[in-house]
Length: 477
Image: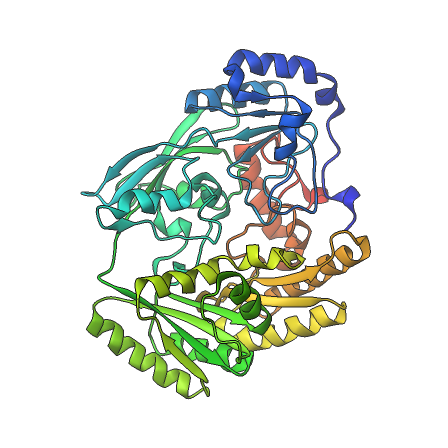
């Protein structure tokens, strides 16, 4: 896809009024909450999907919901596009701005407002990082389940926007399964509250609509999430296989048996070597594929479940079985897995895909992924959430070579189409953003897309919130 069709043309009427818009925003926000100089704007021109960059018109850094409402009300009145942003860790280009847009970054709204253990909930501002929730609750024996690899940096607001998952979501679910309520500002500045501490709300499930809406229905400023009591114990185990096919078949049989571990993570040989070189986690280097299977409960419970999993793995010619013997060893095992993206970035540029497939198609999709990438003259490392079929092939390329970058993008598109063709979908947790926007027609019919866009337009008739994302540009209503 060419650079020219990735973004809507900037609104010249907005660009011509830049000085006035910035001056008006300065009246709405404290001086330290507005960025307008070229040097200050540079960090906001892209996100973790670094292939494309745009310098925004200005950046607002509100500290309160009232300030968010004031900025949105102003921008709505004067037809200024707004791009909501958390920590900028999006891997699909979800937070990349446009030249005519104000970036609304919630990084200053980073307070945990309440830890309510009686109701097992936490209420916090949208700029709180994912990991900080669990750290705050850990002293009292609780944690927040969704754990993206970027959890040290990514924020709960961004997690809600993309419906983020993580390694431990096989058992506990992704963000939407752990989100109870939000405070959200609509595009015209109206503040609404959806859900709350109660288990369910009357009426339409608007909370479910908001989670995963990629900042196009409103800007979440506060969230109430579910806290879970920490288990008595947890134990990750490494299972090594000669081939990816054996590992994939083992995953299918584990789930088919009715066993639901906390996590089942998959690495192929390139990913194993990359992660081991970085983390020194003790991963076996003489295998073609590795599963990290974590179980939890009492020692007796874990032993019983692992006995069953080991028996299943034996049917698939498991080569290595290694149970961790200490919390330090367990932490190293997970450090290797959660460092996979960063460790890969040390050796090459890469595009990370995010398709999801039925478990019975894992082996087929892995084989076809290797064939697709090889046909473009590139390399791939596979590391993904195998238990729920959320694939993350990392396509390695040279970003300084435009032809190499184009091949990597084309290979990625073919892989995502493959995921859809076998009965899966375009995204499991990274969102559509810019990356998958033009593939939406491969998954959805014109009628499906029209219905989705009608819902989006009901919240934002002028299409000011996070423009150029999610829907094909030529299909907008």
